[in-house]
Length: 115
Ligand SMILES: [Ca+2]
Image 1 (cartoon, rainbow, N blue to C red):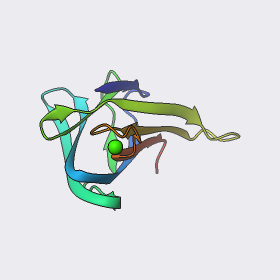
Image 2 (tube, rainbow, N blue to C red):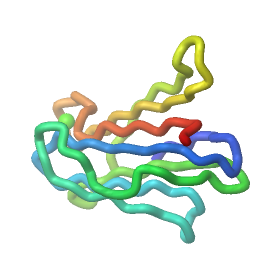
Image 3 (cartoon, rainbow, N blue to C red):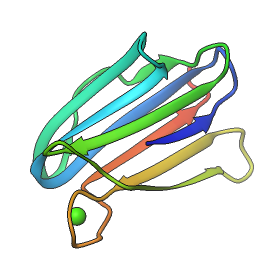
Image 4 (cartoon, rainbow, N blue to C red):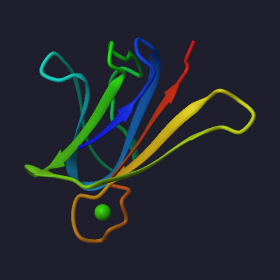
């Protein structure tokens, strides 16, 4: 699981895609135990993991992503930046479900602002 510090009470966008031979399950956690969104999909060719694409961060701004497949948590690597010359913040992350270390089994993006 990885956690990110977004600005509090801010609308943000989210999208996830899978490239894996095993079902991928992603939890987007905004308030642990209270506000958790689950995305689940199987697909090897950048298949959209269907679900909502707009959310709002909570009072603490912390947003966490937990990804698992076959009951095993996946390691996640990510990069956070701002599109140069704008105020568009983005986080792109990749997760690995087995041993080939391509880290594309789930690719997801969080970005803000939206609207
Ligand atoms: Ca892989």
